[in-house]
Figure 1 (cartoon, rainbow, N blue to C red):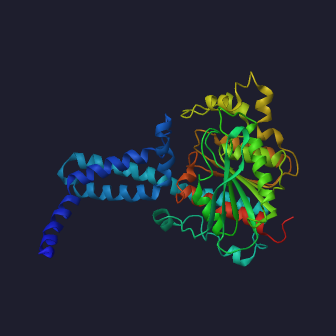
Figure 2: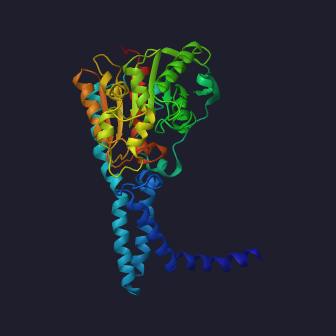
Figure 3: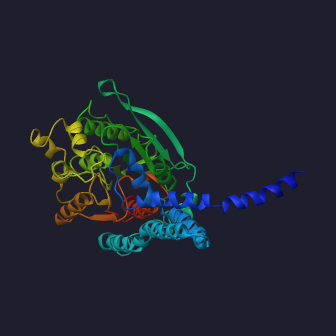
Length: 413
C-alpha cells in the first residue's frame, strides 16, 4: 500500500518541480541574491546579503544554471520565458564573477608570499605540519559541504581580569594531543562595541587542529569604555597568558597576534607599539589603521556610519581629539624591525576601504618591514563569516602558510 502511494506521489512531485512556479521562484531568488555580488549594502540590515552573496557564488552558479535550463525548455511557451532566461544568464554571470577573479588573485598573493618569505618558504616547516595544510587555495567540494575541522580541546570563559567590575574572559583551543605549541592570540571585531571570544570559532578550532594553541581574548566595549581601555585589556590578557603558558602548553617564543576589523586594529597597535609578550607575526584581517583618514574619508554607501563608530570609540572628532586619534592609529607606529605582517583586505569593503590596507602595506614596505598584502577583489568586510566561501578559503590557505613559516619553521630568526 505504501509503495502504491509513493508511486502516485512521484508524478506529482515531478510535475511540481517542472511547474512554472518553480522556474519563476528560482529565477527571482537567484537574481535577487546574485545582484548583491556587485551591489553595496545601503543599510546595515542589508549588509549580510552583500557579505554573503560572493561567498555562496558556487551555489548561485548552480541555482542560476538550473533556472536557466528550466526557462529555456519553456521558451516556446511565450516571451516571458525568454525574458526569464536572459535574467538567468545575467545572474549566472554575476555568480561567476568571484570564481572568475579567483585565479588572478591567487597568483598575485602566491607571488608576494614567495618574494617576501622566500621561494621555498615552507622548507623548514616539519613535514608533518606541511602535510596538514590545505592542499589547494580553493576546493569546490568544501564550498558545498564545509571545511572539515577535527576535534580539539576547548576551555571556555576563563576570567583573566575584572577592570571596573567587567568580567573579561578568554577561550583556549588546543590540539587533542598533549604537547607544547606555538600560540595564536586572536581578537574579535565588532566596531569596538560588540563581540566575544566565541566569535569566529570555526577558525579557532581549525587552527588548533593544525597544531596551535589559539587563545581568543575579550576586551571592554565602547561607548561605555573608550580607548585606550581596549589596549589595557589586551595587555592584561597577554600578561595572564604569559603566567599560564605552561598550563596551556604554549611556547612563549612562538606567538602571533591576529585580529579582525576592530580586533585587527588592536592587534596591530599591540604588536607595533609595545607588547607584554614577544610577537613573531601579525595577521590583520581588514583592520582600520589610520583613524583620522578613516573619519575624513568614509565609504559610500556608509552602512555602518563610520564616523559615529569612531566618535563612540574615541569620544569625539579628529578636530576635537587629534592627538588621541593619532595615538589610536596603528599606521603611526610603523618603524623598522616590526614583526612580519599579513594584511588581508576585501576589495569591495564598505566599512574599512581597501585603500587603507594598501597604504599600510606601502608604509611597512618603505620602512624595510616584511609585509604581504592579500587583497580579495570581490569580497566585502567580514567575508570570513562564511567560513567555507571562496574568499575565506583563499585567505585561510595563505594565512596558515604564513603562520607555519613564522611559528613552526626551524630556521626562523
